Each structure stands twice: as C-alpha cells, then as structure tokens.
Image (cartoon, rainbow, N blue to C red; front, side):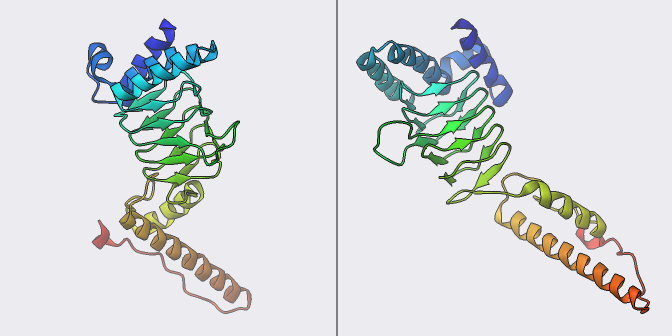
Length: 243
C-alpha cells in the first residue's frame, strides 16, 4: 500500500513540471487526494462494505471534485492533473502509468449490468474534456485529444481526435510530408505534432497534395522516357521565402 502511495507521488514530478516538492504534492494536488481515497474505498468495495465504500467515494467527490466509483480498478502510478470534473465509472479499468486531465469522463452507454465502461491499457493519456464511452479498449500508449468523444476501441500507440473520435494516420503521413518539405526547403509547421490545429492541418494537407503531384510527374517522366521522349529533369530549388 505504502509502495503504491510513494509511486503515485513520484509520478507527479515526471508528468507535471509545476510540481515543486513532495509536501506541495501531498497537500495541494486534488488528483493525488482522489487516488489515495479511491484506493481505500476500492478496498472496502472488494470486501463487500459497499455502502461505506460509496460514502467514502461521495466524500471524495465533494472534497476533490473528482468522482471515481469504488468499483473502478486503477493501476499503479495513475495521475489526474487538475482533476475537476473527472468521472470514472464502476466497471472502468485503468492500467499502469495512465494520465487523465480535467473534465475527462470514462462513462457507459447503457443501463445494463456488467461491463459497460472503458478499459485503459498501460500508458494511456486522455486530454482535457475528452469522453471515452462504453465497454471499449484504449490500447497501450494511446493518446486521446482534448474534447474528443471516443466510442470505438483504439489500437495501441494511436492518437485519436475529434467528435466522434477518429485515429490520426501520423506515421505514414509524417515521412511523406517531411520528404517533400525538405525538398522545398520548408519546415512544416505541425507536421510532427499529435494534436494538429486548423492551420497545421491545412499545411499538412497541402504537403500531401504536393507529394502526390510529385509522384505523378515522376511516373509521367518514366513513361515518356520508355517511349523515347526525353524529358528535361531539374532539381527543385529551395524556396527562400518560406524560411
């Protein structure tokens, strides 16, 4: 028990640069208070002292602004940053090293008994205001963008944004964008970020379009070369205006 408490405190320093001291974390971080109290209420829930567990959970919500059902299973080094408005349902399962920001809901989509809340695998990060609903699974290392609404399972390592949530195809696109951006001498703003804003998204789409045009022109040059039509090939100069 004490080993877990120590881990919960230490993980704050790795994920919140504003943390100054252990005393500050213990006395002023509602996310830490909520986790401590939940571990007590969850123990009582498992021992079938369910009313007492619910009452402690109620006090926890009143004291911290964070509602965690005592039936929820939470792993090691779980961190809730800021915390106000977080709701975690009864059948939610949270793995090790997960992080939730304020306003996150791990909720259900039905009134049926049984598993009806999400399962978060190790290392998941859920952005502020996001809603993850239903008995779905969020794979290890996945990230959910702020204010997203996720209704389907998310594969490990993926990034999900939007309403409803959709998975960003970052890995395949980033290499292509970097390729054409380097060719143009342009440092693509937002090309490697997990959470694109509208400007970054517009630039990224433009780079995707240029990349496709570049491929088509290369294919046309090869076809013309094969039928004996020689095409002059020129290197693309750097565009100094973009620096």
